Length: 122
Image (cartoon, rainbow, N blue to C red; front, top):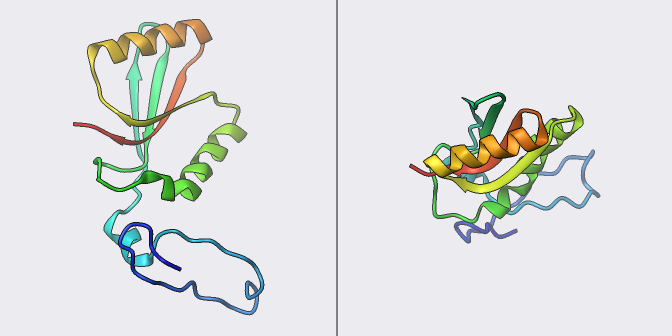
């Protein structure tokens, strides 16, 4: 397979258990090490409710995050199976308006908010 980030060829190690299973991988092991996924968790107190922000990367990189879809979907499924309503964002920047929007959404939903994003802009 060819890595979508660095364009290098790589191979997936096979065993007798997964020899005939089709397995797709978009990122080579070297790029996984270069761009490690670190789940960051923040809680913001709003007027009545809370907003929980979960990001997969510490900083914004110039890579296409769509190739990390497998990891992103695992985090989403764990939240979804617990009955949490999730808002998806590519990247996030804290502004005064952002806090106001979060507060309005939480009051409309009458519950806490969980935001799942790839990275937080500085």
